[in-house]
Image 1 (cartoon, rainbow, N blue to C red):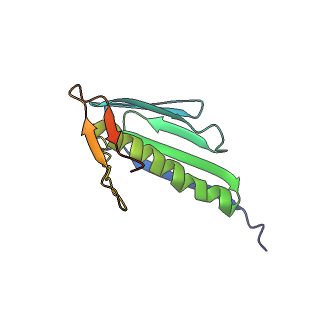
Image 2: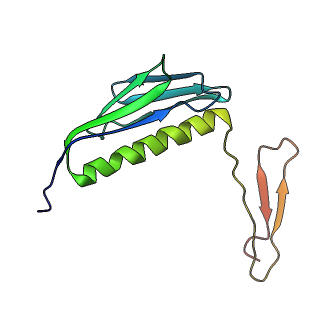
Length: 122
């Protein structure tokens, strides 16, 4: 039967090194680290999310979830982990310019707050 429900599913995650604080308030998780604070709401997830500051862990419990719902647990854990990486190590985005025929001229302003793209349409 495809309606098999797991009675109880749980996943937990240890804080990553350098994470200063993890606060959980009604499914909104706030992670604080040396690089700042990130918060994200998991209102749509029908599971219990709770943290233990003494043991530095975050746990998610789900009762009577279908397999689709149980799959969300791992997703939430991964999101929280990514938030922890974000406030400790940080993320870096790289962008690459390619052109087909006309060379595109790209300049970054002196203040480093704007990118100037010239000759975009040839």
